[in-house]
Image 1: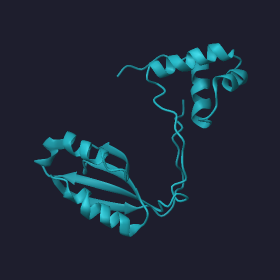
Image 2: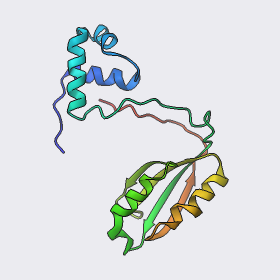
Image 3: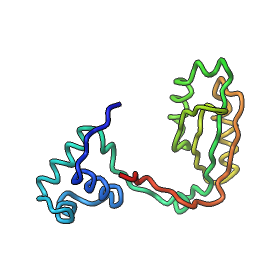
Image 4: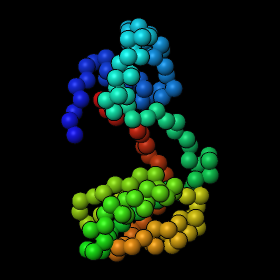
Length: 155
């Protein structure tokens, strides 16, 4: 994947969008010294280039009843490794799985999973995750508290 050239104005726009997702082109333009239309055109180019993938809302998971977060380290059998794509597709369909990463090292995948409580994670584990073919081992680490959580990239 090729890196896209970004100038100082692009970086300032991206930084503001990350820190204040609801901000509009007029407000950004006012802050960085661009007209609303020039700012909008830059934002549109950044979307068209795939740099801005989405603008989302961040919810407080505990306030919506998702009190348990677990990192699941998944190791596939040697035969299961040939089906990395199938495993990836399967976990992509589980709403409990917020993030899924393919790793190099002792385990093949790292999943970030949220559920209402430990009992709900246990149900997810036994009824969904452990039912997928090719799994050799799953080690689950329960998050006690969030120290830092950010989606803001240091651009």
